[in-house]
Image (cartoon, rainbow, N blue to C red; front, top):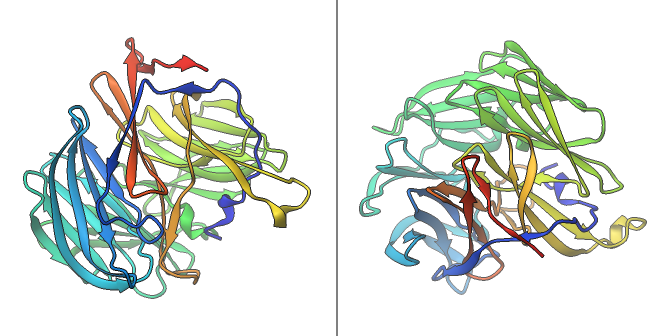
Length: 380
């Protein structure tokens, strides 16, 4: 189930560290209960896209903002007409092209939407309302631009992974491949690296297996027997970051790199929560809940975000943060979006930009020390 990993039972973690600076960016006309911001960044410039809603919960406008993280100044905001929806609306991603000249935004559930925008002025270059999905495509995800600058989408259809690539020049499919391989039990756990044409599948409770898009096992596999799998992140170059936990709030973060596994034990059941432009950094969410003995009465007391360094997994920064999500409806295949923070490495800083329960973004700037990119932080 797509909400399976929301049910977390964790204890408070030791070693809290705090960012050097924090400020907020207001999001005009945003309603966090109906739409969450999607974000991308390059060279210290943040791009944000989110739906705005009227009093009756109808939306026909997309707000797109460019913001300078260093000067704390808004560079431009535009309003774009989009298909009207009523109620909460989940986006499937917002990504920059490899050359930084274009942005791609997608809503992959009916009414579907794909926009290409120019970064120089946020103008619409091309748009489409005809993504090549059918009602049988579950867990639709948008992975942005691949190494050839094609737009990469994935879904699960008939328990098999489906990979679609769309040309940015006319927004039409150039390839549509259904992978031959093991059945996919969890549609919302797609782990795919479009640029490498590789995917990882949780084919057993203790094994993440790497496959080509054609379904051939590469021989790379991460095995772990100490807990339930709670997702993974592809780091590129055949590397994987996987998350495990159990019912006594003890978990493990494991980095796999070409037959070598490094593990970090942690006092929570960690789940991936964040999108990073640097594979050396990843995000984790760790809510703290109440009564272990009565799950039906559990309530989230606090929730922490952990910034991880992935090479030899380590927690380098921590802050309180609420888990957020929106769904298009209550059905099993109507679209879902996590409130993933954006982790942006630029120069000597790492920024963590996070959606909040208010119409604003929380921005944390963390200085990077030394040649290894370890954030400076002060223990509490």
